[in-house]
Length: 466
Image (tube, rainbow, N blue to C red; front, side, top):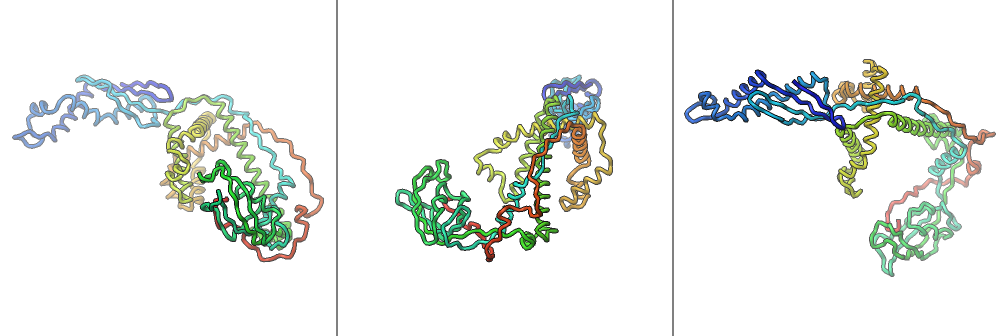
């Protein structure tokens, strides 16, 4: 006999009572099992008279052995009787035991009941993805900056120019550690040094020496320099300026992008890339908003085990990402001043939303009678195998068909609510239409000075001034 009582957070007690002949036989079998290993002086192991063995093996030992030997079988039978599927490891408690019967309590969580409200007609609004001329010009000029030539400049340094400098920092007249460098290339306006350093070098010329009176920020990482007044002695060795390339066919070929041979090809590629990027961002934002709206349309009491499993999955994902950069999870936590429990608490809210969404999609799939065909499963296995450069049979060893089918069902459910959503297209932004073939900035129209060999201006040193 068994009964199921559901309690809070989809956790319940499955009470199983075994009595009469079934219990008696179970105890007798347990006694015989124990007796085989009992040694009594004067008799071979397990061959002593039953009366002596019964004196040696207590009732409690026999009964506990009977429970240990049969609990899983009794639980499985009770699960079938009550049509239950545990989602957490059942915890066993022996509620009562006697010569006539035993009563066991198995406590575990089951999938929660999900109550759906109005999941059709939810808002799905994709923002305008029109690429403006300003966005286009900004991206084009970013590319021009990347391929710019660097030339020595005779005049005063301006924002955007690079100065090659020797410098040393002093606090109370004493040089401090990490505040010295020679031949350092600093782009003015990059904000890579402390506030004021770069501003005071604007207008300087090659050969000049300057003293910069500065104050380190209060939140600076070096304790002895936080809020400290310092003096940097700087010598300007050279001033360099960027010369942006003209937007022509030569520049297009320098970009070395597939299918790009001419300036027009380059402009087309830039616009398409910007459009695709904005479209992807807009759709991602709309997808998130749709799932948030769906979360408001369900009632469910989340089992702790599902939330904890999702939190652990997110921690594992972070750990795998860190490993790609050669950083261990514990090292990362130490750098962040956190413990694993702090990280898990940070993930809890997102994990709860993820679990709620997953349960909602699963319920919608059930209500709408959505199905995953065998060919859908085969196709997805093939996609995963191609993505990870593995053969399909190896993928199947890592991802069970049930797991993949569940994910595909959730995808189908999402596509269902998306196709039944209420869409509203935003008004298009008014943008300036080009009247000429050239889609460049005014700077792009100007022919630059004679090109020189491109030089790297990347910084190769770090200092306390940064």
